[in-house]
Image (cartoon, rainbow, N blue to C red; front, side):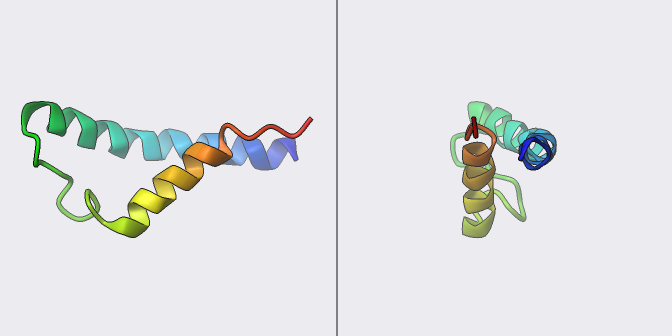
Amino acid sequence: MAGLAHWFVAVGFYTLLLTLVDAIGRLFQADWSLSLIGDWTPYIGYVEFLGTMTTVRDD
C-alpha cells in the first residue's frame, strides 16, 4: 500500500505545478485560466482526486 500512496504523491507534484501556474495567474487577473485545462471539469476532478489520495493514510 505504501508504494501506491507514494505513486499518488509523486504524480501530485507534477499536477501541483500546473495548479500553481493557474493560481499565480489568478492572482493578477481573476478570470484568467490555463487555456486548455484551467476550467475543464475532468481536470478539476483529477486534481481533487489526487489531493484526496495524497492525504489518505492506511495504518
